[in-house]
Image 1 (tube, rainbow, N blue to C red):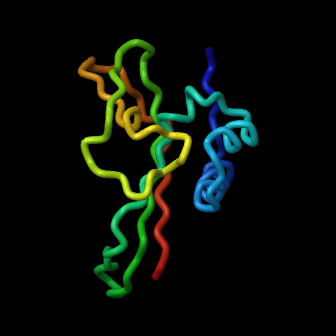
Image 2: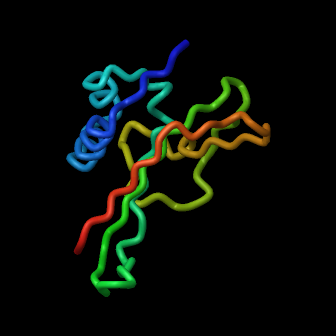
Image 3: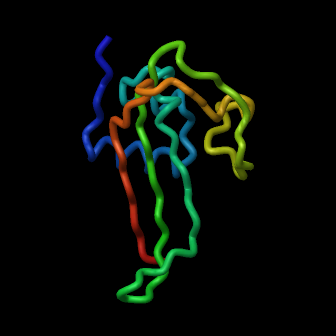
Length: 118
């Protein structure tokens, strides 16, 4: 099965839709993504206290990872780090963290970093 690869513009649109509060199901339908391949596409709002070392301006950094995971090589469990608020209301807290011990069972497909001045 071939995984759909989103363009950079589509990934930025996915971020915008997530920020707007769109559900995972709506985003999957809009971008023709299977929900089983969307789950590893986790958006993390990171700390709002980064400071650019050159300009000394505060910046907000957000990171989105898209990861391919070998079927059957992982366990799904609750988060080891508290999530507030939950990144998606359709994502149950007991299934937010995927863990694997198998070497080579994951592959980073995409990394998107957004840096905005605050």
